[in-house]
Amino acid sequence: MIPTSRSTVRRLPERARYDRATVDAILDEGLVCHVGFVDDGQPFVIPAAYARQGDRLVIHGSAASRMVKRLAAGEPACVTVTLLDGLVLARSAFHHSVNYRSVVIFGRTRAVADPDRKRELLRAFTERLYPGRWSAARPPSEQELKATLVVELPLREVVAKLRTGGPIDDAEDMALPVWAGVVPLRLVAGAPEPAPDLAGDPPSAALAWPPEA
Amino acid sequence: MIPTSRSTVRRLPERARYDRATVDAILDEGLVCHVGFVDDGQPFVIPAAYARQGDRLVIHGSAASRMVKRLAAGEPACVTVTLLDGLVLARSAFHHSVNYRSVVIFGRTRAVADPDRKRELLRAFTERLYPGRWSAARPPSEQELKATLVVELPLREVVAKLRTGGPIDDAEDMALPVWAGVVPLRLVAGAPEPAPDLAGDPPSAALAWPPEA
Image 1 (cartoon, chains in turn brown, cyan):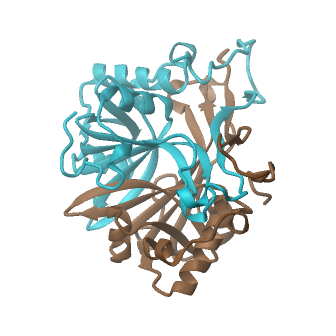
Image 2: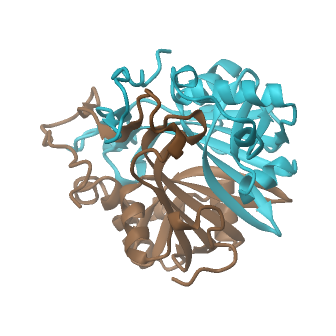
Image 3: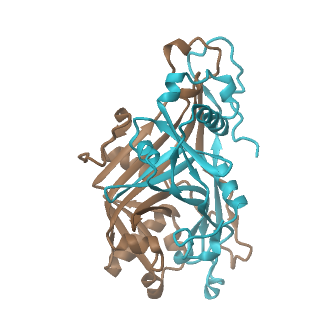
């Protein structure tokens, strides 16, 4: 992707990546994005579940949601996904840092009107976040589909930024007897907690999470 | 805190909390916030480490950073912290959801000019994210302090929103033989990875993370 003035990373440009493979890998690992939009000059930043579908990001929500309504109206948006990978401990307080991978997307979202495409995107969205559930669960009714807005944002003006590896200390600090390194962080799933009132004898292998890459 | 028109949750208002105890607990568990600001009508959403200090949120960064410069200029901002707690699997595709706790703060950030206060905020910031490191690591030089902008955002116009618990299915779906429940998610720390070139014999108990509540 070609960097634009707003998607070009100016601070620490060596951390920026503009290739789709890097962007897609980050988007396909994350679960929650932060959606930015402007209302009367005031920025709003709202978390939302999302899924990448090919060359676009898909978000959905209630037709009654302020955020989804703003997105459906096609106003300028910025959607950011951040994965936190670790705490970086340096020999100096100044060089402490965080390992992360993030993607920032600029653009205008578009509401998906066609009911067949909407259903297909919801299917893909559900399968991405909750693998295997679209076929296991009751599919959406016509009324449920109508109550759901689906918006998509093209992955056109997008940049990834990441920090990996250990601390980068100043040469004159290297001899200090201070522990330095990385404390890795990651999101893990615990044991599934069944609802207390399950009917019948549903398969207990409820969900393969995280999904196989 | 008294909800304002922009901080009042309109969609699913039963998930909103306006009390400081709830807000503080979420802010004190998170590590990364998403900072929203507007530049020429375009929203930007940028991830940043943060720490709560009393009744304000503290963010810092390079004096060369676009985001930090915008924040230091005191323009309208929105800062959001989101903790992802689980995937909620329902008997219908429609009622699948996510358990989360989030805080959204509106306001104008202010740059901290006083050097003593700046140093104190950086100390508190470092101790919050990397417990025990302010005293272990080399303290910042005057030059490093000057290269760092510290901004604070008062916790005045702020709202927490959260979803907890199991799926809420429609009555007519309760008899379906579909597994339903929650897959809990949490952020965990792995074994610390020392830098390859540690000098002396620094204590290996590098960091108590997560910090004791």
